[in-house]
Image 1: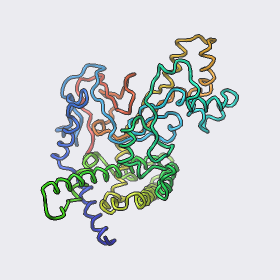
Image 2 (image 1 turned 90 degrees about the vertical axis):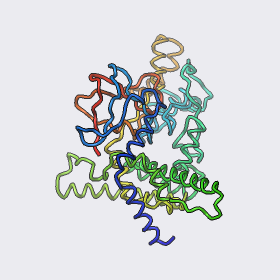
Image 3 (image 1 turned 60 degrees about the horizontal axis):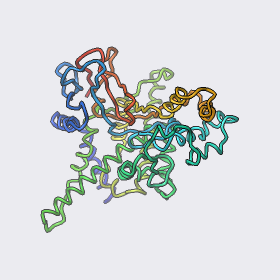
Image 4 (image 1 turned 120 degrees about the vertical axis):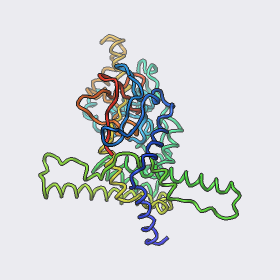
Length: 423
């Protein structure tokens, strides 16, 4: 395919991707999410408002105060960079993994805690806790899923099961893994990740959206080829690749989006006028740099996929995906098992007990960081249909049984949900 052919395909696909969805397409998508696969999903609905602009999440019945309105896993999410040393969680579902010993040791062995550990906890002890050679009192009362390593051998992401490991690898991590077996692709991925660390750690999440969309488009294409071959056609089937991509893009087509550098509010320390223009141009530049690095990753990992869906990997789409997170993202939070452990030890044993003499120095070294939860950022298709309000009637609230990255909305104050979001 020549550069001119590639540009023509990109322009055609871009027009499809940026076209606003019809009411029928949006309704069909939200109806598919509201099938009774999750408790309570049949009690809410997404509809276009007759009073407000756009679609909103509405109650299908009255909810009692404190009753759960919605529980929804993230469509896509990622742990925040600064939080990776504080919580060892599955990069797919955000469940804590490993053991209490490994969770604590991983935190304290990180460079950010090295000064705090000085004179409190011996490094050799921490290494033994991390490797499982040494155990802590009553730690078995706080079981966690086994820790599965990334298929690419990186230490950036871990998982709670082989299913989560494989799902992540097929959808995005085979491109973005910075492990030692990646070769040139791994070096390109490292450059992309490092750029995000230095500029904006939302870029890897935006990259996941593009990569997962391309992956779903490929699955659609494979299914279409298999269906065509099953018809015993004598000719090589001609597959509508643009349709495969458009169907894969549907979860984000219906989401409220805007160009990132246009949606960000002007910071208080940036004056209106030329300074603001410079500020927004700098955002555009770093987004373009990030996308260029992502394309270099694809050039090594799967150039055919990039050439098949060039419209997806354009700054027009990338900027809107980042803008989608700017407008709709919700914090992912999962309570810390480490906090639960130390609270239980304090409640069960006296200060001078043998058990507390073991755990006390670890708690002192962690200081206030002992209760740091898993913190991430995610996009939730249904939750994003809810707007902020100074007088809200639902609030995000999890209980002790919510140990993954799902968003939980609980009703308070009013009976009917009337929050809206904009087109």
